[in-house]
Image (cartoon, rainbow, N blue to C red; front, side, top):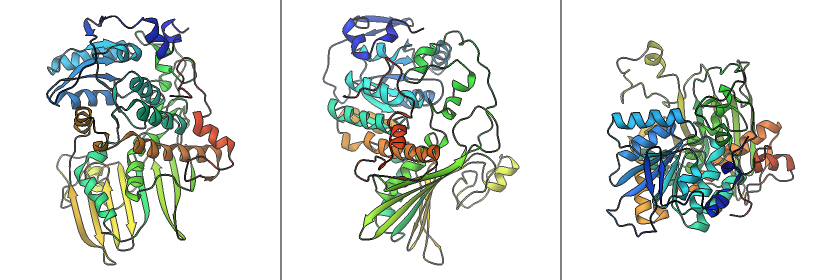
Length: 471
């Protein structure tokens, strides 16, 4: 049963005064509301982190290293997770922020300048929309949307409320990968005709999980949020939610969206004219609903009779590697690093994550972490190459201070367009047919079933956790 509080929309919640106390005590700390302020270059930015179990801990560690950022509050629906994170932060002298279960209370506090969102996919858009409505800037983990329509609503809300919103595709802040994209733009490998994103990650079976009582300290109503309420099982909860359609988007929408973003970025396109995907859930019989093996293709119309392709492939188990992608186990000269398991020394690790770009004068490979290499001409002579680093969290904070959205490495519209390719591929896979796409709008032409999947995952929204029709 939903609580009275969770039956309200965020706007109703704010209007009711239920969350507007000037000194709201949460988890032993106080979030002290204060009026709007002009932020100087040296002023502290008070940040709330929403979802702190997995990727959220990376947010805690990353933002804690940035000068002038105060980790003011942690928000999570699992009290046990909150307590563990407070202990982790105390051990590392990272402070003791306030804690809150309901994100709406966090958003009501005027002393919070920005939030970072590391919750499950089905919450990303709604929490980000609520945040910009509340005047907060947002770092939103990938993918920014669980379906294409709500991503468009988020983009519209960001424009309406004029907030700084960064998408969590952090490769866009990596200096080497940015350099690789410049090579593609400048013709280093000639005329690019094909981009290929690769996501080969060892994903074991999740097995079958029985229905059971909700764990103590978990607000399962808030965790479920916009999704349909289903009986609790461990396979619908921590991490395994990735493989359930109501809450996740499969590995193409998990690790894969990073490589999808780089592939689309490298080609420089918005919407394709065709999208097709085939695959399945192979080898295991378990509770997973999303495919663990998927081959995708997108076609782009360049005009003048020219076209380009973007391919994407997901594999889940033992596989080969492609080019030098996924060889993080090797040094720059291809020498195995010490201390690795024998199969990793031989094959360069179990995962292959990255991108390949093919052109008329050569090809370029980007690994999924921090480097690129090129091979030029018919003899495939080694060309430009580099390793690099970047700090995506810093980029977000810099833009929060400057108020210049043009300096965002991964602005929300770019994140939305890349996430939308994930949703087009999943829709094609689920329907078993190629989708013809309007290159201006991203809608499936003459295909109501596909557009329904792109609209809400054919799942709908559970009141009151509804993405608004008008933002």
